Amino acid sequence: MVSNKLDTGSRDAISWLPDEVLGNILSLLPNKLAASTSLLAKKWRHVFRSPSDLYIPLWPVIRESFRNFVDRTLALQFESPINKFSLKYHVNNSSDVVNERRWISNVVDRCVLEVDVSLMPGSGVSVDVDDLFRSETLVKLSLGTDLDLGVPPDVYLPALKSLFIDSIVFDYKDLCDVLLPGCPMLEELTVRHEYEFYPYSLSSQSIKKLTVYYDCEAGIDSISDMSFDAPSLVSLDYTDYALSEYPLVNLESLVRAKLNLCYSRKIERPDLTGLVTGISNVEILYLSPASADVIARCVKDGLVLPVFKNLISLTFGSYNERGWKLLLDLLKQSPKLETLIVQGLDGYVGDVRIRPFQVKVEEL
Image (tube, rainbow, N blue to C red):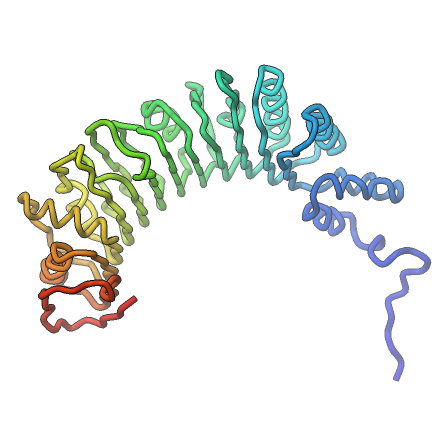
């Protein structure tokens, strides 16, 4: 039997690969290691310039060395397009602001597609990421964390489809009236925040998936409201305090909703009428134990549950009798329900009995 072997001559095992393949291999390596391959031969100097993904980690070293490394890495790429750019950076003074602004401008000029920027500003320092809000090629943008960020009035992100905002303090008008209207193709929005952001609303004609997460352990100091005006939204994941009012909830295309609403003594009588009615056309509904408790409180205060005419799957949890009685009411209002997934039965002792329904019941 004759074995077929690839003849690579005197070259090493991978140098014969096309530059495009070698470039993709280098893009998977840390930039410092990838840069070291340029010492192997002249061919590798060219290859290092071609990777399209740049990940710039936070170095626990002298800041000047970090700045030089990033500048050198970008310079070696010349004007090659960049697919992904990731940067974690402490911004302690005006020089750091100049650096991050220069790097962001560089990748935007080179038609970057995905950006993940996590900037940690020092006391009294304001960062500048305005160029990110004027990219005509950006498809995915992640911004964080603990930033007090202003939004330029001329936001224009015509290709942006996914936006992730982590612990950024916006003026709510900047987010709702400036940023979102400047993203006509946006389909997925995630907003995580640990600071009060109220009153506010989220309005978009294009968003299909929305996640809003407020850290309920952070507390709440004011009574406020929330509106959702997103007629194309298909999936909603909402964690927050149950607020005083939901004046506008336009979610006519909603298929899936996950609610984790917490009760606060500072909002003694939350009004969930707008929210519950606005999601009543869902097919799949997840209610956390905290949500069941606060909705049950509202029912006691006069909330009339709507008919969930399209609901086929309900995941429900409770930690008290009030919540389990709410489940009975929900079952009566869900004529098409096929699957009921119950959470938290192990720790419950009570006298609530559920009569047989034509549903498949699963216990988690």
